[in-house]
Length: 443
Image (cartoon, rainbow, N blue to C red):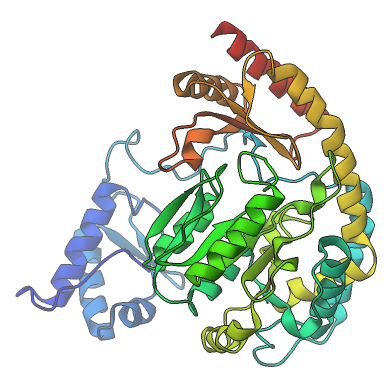
């Protein structure tokens, strides 16, 4: 559709308005020589006007030489139409720049030796019978059963398939939950997960900052508290047992729901994985899990276990909005879980992360302070913000992207770098560490 807008309060005829705007598009470079114009019937439908209005405008532009008609192939911007100088005209072919190697907190290591199972999963999807209408918004029953078994085995969370819901990731799970909670403030760790903050704000709620390393003692006026107890994002610590119990007691007293984002609990290699917070209180904690760290971020698939008292309202909201993850993705995950792909990928990634983490620590510890225990696929380093900005710029110039700790903070006065080591190859990681060390040493 052409980027034009006709104003029915304008005294000029609609055809004149359309012709004027097409001229401006040609002069501004938005329409270039040789661009094909939309068919008059389709453009009239897009603009909500009669076809004669468009034909009148095109006839005028043809007469003026802005457009030309080609027999049997429609109307085109004329070769002689004069737009802006070539240097300022929009590029016809986008410049392809070298993509940056991501050293972020969310790109996982995926062992290529498991690709055969990945391909088999999608072959099974291709021959499976898809639902004719909207499928169950709760998720495929077979997938919910497999996830319930896995949550019990790996996270100590005793649930059955009827309590598991499939979502489009943790952000979608949080959005669905907020839809059935009172419209009060939501407490979120600071520093904390930026997407969660954005989701809360988009719901029209106030975000209340929870200092990430301090016990939670007050949730008055909050409908929920969003936390990452297994591996605080991005500082890295495990929430101590006393703080877990204190958080639950505070939530009960102030009648708030605790939202547990269990985003990468499978990848601890310093200690055994800590049981999920939800295993301590199923009626006070809403659990959110994701396939992004263990399988692939672009699957956009997650799961939630919400308190039973909220389940009917939660299901009703999702059924009303048809907001469910795609059936093919769910069907593929059935195969990936059933055939052992997920377990194999997690074991392989855990070994890689356990080997890479000491290399990162050895390289960076002479120049910056480690913010917390290293687990999962990233580490966080404290250093002055100005220095962190300059190191990030040096890394980007060399082809690597690292995140600033300050970008995860709202009121917290922390600064430094969040350095991921899951996504790059071993050679890329070695080169990235050389760049970071050189930049830090210069400063």
